[in-house]
Length: 245
Length: 265
Ligand SMILES: Nc1ncnc2c1ncn2[C@@H]1O[C@H](COP(=O)(O)OP(=O)(O)O)[C@@H](O)[C@H]1O
Ligand SMILES: [Mg+2]
Image 1 (spheres, protein in one colour):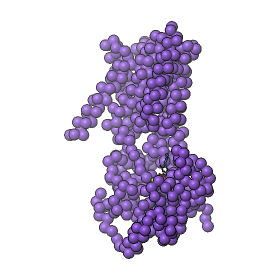
Image 2: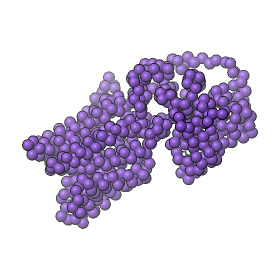
Image 3: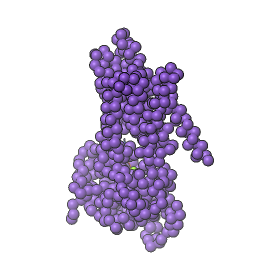
């Protein structure tokens, strides 16, 4: 097996005197798609931020492979209204990109004519796609997404995840995401990690969905959602809403 | 030589200070650090008092104590924006302790007044050298770290993902603000330094589409207001520092009115 891009060993994180994560052994291999699920406050964002290097672990360690290039789409990005920022300028932070590259990135994201728009004037879906386009500029081999579709409606979220699948297929980058969207979890992931302060269970999506700990956390209701998902596996939604945005 | 004229020296001091304060002030606005500016500027009064008591160069004393305060506040509040109350307490305590400290040095009380309200007409050639040296240092640091500072301001997590250490950028900004305080204290005085930081940025905001445009426009406004304020203070026989800030405030009012009108149109 190839060496993991990132690996945590016995990772523990304390925040404000509270043990948020303990004994987390986690690894993600090149090209792998891993989804983290767990209740609110279970430490999903904390785990991602520890992997990014934003949080110092209180125990254990994090091993990053030498060639690791991170792309990050945060859970939310609040822009201070006093900071003027065009989409093109945002794409060029921190490293300036040529006009041609910015244009290409926006074309790929389906935002061709928005380069001169203020970030504050974008819709929720456009904003998330700009965040993704920026995260992809440095050709990351690990893309980290934290509830990237939280503010989007269903078709918007579906379209966003299709973009990520496209990117994955084209670049082969690994994807580590937090998602509440069970449809996505089940269809797109190679592996699901169920987190609640520690790793409760992990494995192939179907296996995790059937695990007793998972059902204890999410309730039997998720079985219904899964059944629904299986039932509609080859059903295609109409994404006119997102396209018309 | 032209530097023999006190008015020329005052104008050069005002322009140098505006040039240093405006881009740094944009970060103060973007990161909501106005109270941080107050705490640092007020602490500088304590530094001035100490310098006068110990016969040290005033700039060095002001810079040293401002820096100590800025670093303390940064460490206490993380991003320098949290803890409004704590910052307010520190800002005003620093001022009070500085003033009480000064009262023990009866013979220098008058001098300290000059540092509370500025004494730009008394700027010497040596002061000019320090002001422009400080301005060059500030512009150099801000220019060098510009993209990293901006990314860290936008989001510490995005900065981390791009290999930038947001705490390091925060410390650089802290150093920059302490230097701005030391440079500006003789020009507008400790009580109005925060105004020199945030008013040009606020006035420039409605007309800027990028951070660079905002910083550039803020610098132009700050330099222009320094010049116009000095002229006005000379003509009207008003205190120079407060007059400069009045001109800036008028710029802000006009900018707000113009941008408000154009948005309604
Ligand atoms: N900066 C912080 N200071 C103190 N506690 C925090 C901080 N960030 C997160 N926490 C706590 O850590 C726990 C996990 O948070 P988080 O990782 O954001 O959860 P999730 O993303 O799974 O909803 C929560 O209980 C939260 O209150
Ligand atoms: Mg979260």
